[in-house]
Length: 291
Length: 282
Image 1 (spheres, rainbow over the protein chains, first blue to last red):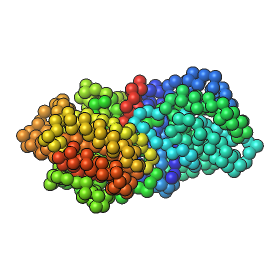
Image 2 (cartoon, rainbow over the protein chains, first blue to last red):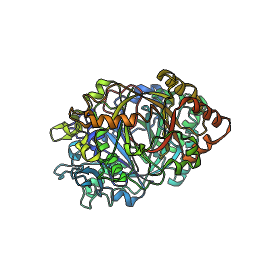
Image 3 (cartoon, rainbow over the protein chains, first blue to last red):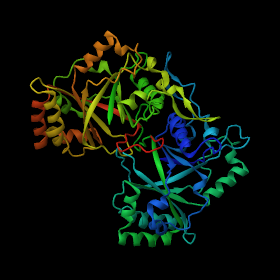
């Protein structure tokens, strides 16, 4: 599937972090869940708690070289799934989804014009907001199965050890590190995502050519953010404590730690609250409107 | 949790697939924003019949199916709230929209989009169910097969016996079906979940609306949700062997009538059965 992460900073002049949650997950997603051809849509919002408190001394053991400026650059990130780059770029094409006196019609109120109030607005940007829309190459290691309760979702961000080629890095991560991680007790799901080296892959065709993201300032903004990390894994557990307990397996912890030193120049975790907007459907799309 | 079902008949101006798009699309976009909602699943009747999906087994398992049942519904929403008060207060403006002045209320949530007259015929058949979670469902990231089993209580069983036996011994047998991903049994109750939720002049409160709703209710007393990866899995699991024979015997004594439907499930709000977090979450 074509998967996009879109890192977004809230409009700090108008909204607290919790107000941003409501505005993004509430009104905004009621429109964006109707994007044409969308096959899955989760909104990950940075958790209110500090993971350092939840993990205690383990935090220092599993984290290395966390960039101090990283977490402050975003409040949340949607992850969206489409069948292809083509369908992604056509997602804003309206389709009839509203019952009216005339029958099924295109909703005239369907628009995403809350963006500059919800997200970090571009000064004098004519309604534009700053974002990092990034194509991710995903690898399902342990396909997630969601129970009817809120799971703890940990994002493991990582930056490649520069002494390894990209190919060697990805092979080692998927071939050696991921199988070991998958042995963690209590793991509900585990997906490894590598950021597309083409940082504009998800931007081209989706945003107009004159968009801020293609300006010198926009490109520099994105490049600075992308320089901090090369990929991110999604890990699902019942709780932070469950993750701690799983890493408490001495032999497993030693093996993972050794590989982390070998593979990563930097590795760190961010807890996010996952909102399911459209349950991802990795099967072929049915022949009718389905979310 | 407080679980409310609302069975709906589409507005005849819409085809069944038009209705899907309008319910899943525009309408669910407001329904998912109802204040304090803890779960919202929409089930749309599948385009294929159970005879098509299950083969001859469908006919063998079906007994006493009421004629014209599908004329009475195209889909149903199932809403979950912590309390009745939360449910009754849900249809109010939601403070979840970023505006130039900051986070503001959106009054359209109070009308759930205001499309009901064009989407439905009459009022939804809105009722409360008590549920028995026999096997908690865990949903993968793909569309799975959801089967609904409607059944009517026989005269020789009290309502209490009927609930106890279905959610007890029968459910325990069903739970052994290979490939079962989830199993929840729901029993309709007389709790009033319409007053205060629908406007006083709604079709639900007219003599005609009451009559058609009672016709629908007369067809069944309980319904079970079952999830499998695909219909073949259920068909194989249920077709034979000691377990199949045991279920046949149990159904003979437990159900005055029993019939099945396949539905396409939309997760508008993934149900959360744990305590709500202290922030907006869906």
